[in-house]
Image (cartoon, rainbow, N blue to C red; front, top):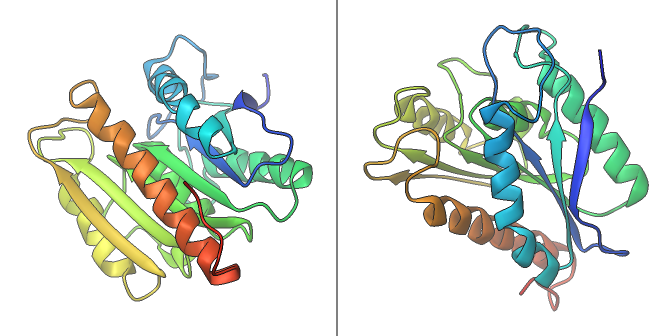
Length: 219
């Protein structure tokens, strides 16, 4: 079985930040992820739409393709394991560069579980799968931004909102925002989802750069 794969959409020599995109999947599925799968392709389209923003802000924009399609385990979820591998690769290439994780559906849950990596400064969740009781300790000291369609039938906007509310005392900052009338797959209101990612990443990176160097920020 092939291992996880990193697809790089922008590759600045000296990036100011790294944005790692994480795609969705299924609760149980050990089949390999393929480029034809909608969950991966959806985030590949998002990555393409973010290229101009990433280039303008000297961001290394990368999409992870997991080894298998499913979450598969509560104690050792497959996509979390792959995300930690990806973070190790990216931070070895660019030590000290802040990372923002951007995940859709299962990718949002994965991002929240992997947020405790020392390089990660924030998580952007798009219609994230965050079931009741989802552990949230990894989000401590990070920025959390969640956007969820109000008529999502695949993942619960109420559950993701509850996760954000539970995380407010742990996170540096945590917000939840609805997209009225939107479902799960980001097909409608596509520009709304993209702008949310751009605005959230900019906000997170500006805030963290101000914490370290008050006179610097991101355009």
